[in-house]
Image (cartoon, rainbow, N blue to C red; front, side, top):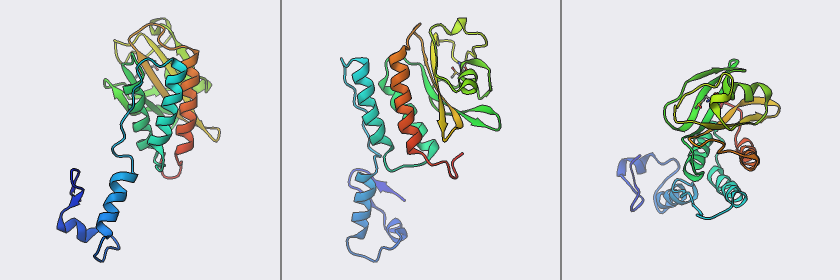
Length: 206
Ligand code: SME
């Protein structure tokens, strides 16, 4: 399918591939739906001087809008990571480790390439996953067993992903600042993780 994003025209061959089309306005309507109802042109809104509470309230709304109508775990995780990375100040990494076969495996993320597998109970991610608790680390160099994927990281927060009491993985954010994350971040991110968990379907995804 070749979609001309300026005019929303399609080439002749693709028109023939549109299921159920028998002429008339159908292709235009189909394209209108694809182009405007699906948030493929989602723009992250940045509000400069917002307090942390306002920032997270606003991000929660943006996340709902971004994930609306999509149930795919990987797609929604990828967009969630992108929203966080481009909206929260002072991050050098934002992404997911997914629980697979008894260990954590790198999932969608934004930032420098990262280590792929983390054993349960190891590092900040493995500890948060094992305890199913959000962990804030003011200075990662003081955290026993911290796994340094990016040498720029100095503080970190990890939020476990749990749906129907099933561990699905963790959300991990890193910052080059010391003590970048505080309780308000933990609360805001936990609220966002709930929206993400509600958005996804487990069937055929994990
Ligand atoms: N620092 C993490 C490893 C993942 S990276 O930061 C992306 C940890 O100690 O588990």
